[in-house]
Length: 266
Image 1 (cartoon, rainbow, N blue to C red):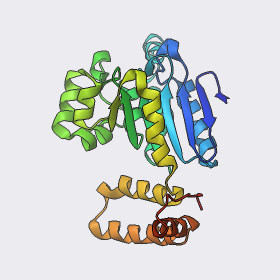
Image 2: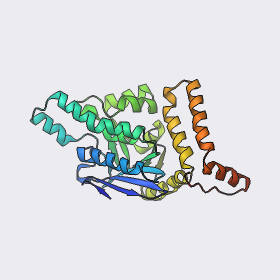
Image 3: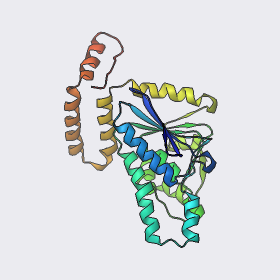
Image 4: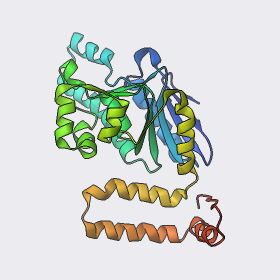
């Protein structure tokens, strides 16, 4: 399914939904068309039976980050600063916030460059899988800018404040292995075997109990912002919901029968 000219969407019922950024000639930079397309894709997915979301880029890049063409237009046409800020808030900021809080688990498939806001697009997902040719860089300084797209929130939580500052202030681009060492990605796979490795990983997520995993994913995402007392209370509430599902009964029954459970998502 094409969403405009910049994003493709494929939904596998009771399986993964795949969002593909499809402006390879612009290295899938976060143009308005791509930001809008991703948001529309998330709308479609939220009402579906998809069990996880895969976010990928086409043409050998994940996303080159900010839309340089829009930056040039802003400079040449002397677009007022407040108008540029509002545009940023409407597009990139809303998209990052939507991804971070999306109820279905999200996985970034980084097979190529993810830089600037594109790196944050990957970090906004719940998990990140990279090929050996992936590269990451928070390169805002190269175009004379500070940080946006959630860098100051997402990056320190993953790599710590000191390393986050180094990555931003130097603008260094790092390879997949170093990104893995820093915790920016969950796994790095051989480029030639990337698709197969991703499929194996995704199967583990898809095979799980959807209701329980969505609550677990949400609770883990919220955990750093809560007290222990609040976390325990919220976990109890979520567990009460999970106790009432057919999947819980199936899981217990399968355990007693020494077989793999077949979760239905209800």
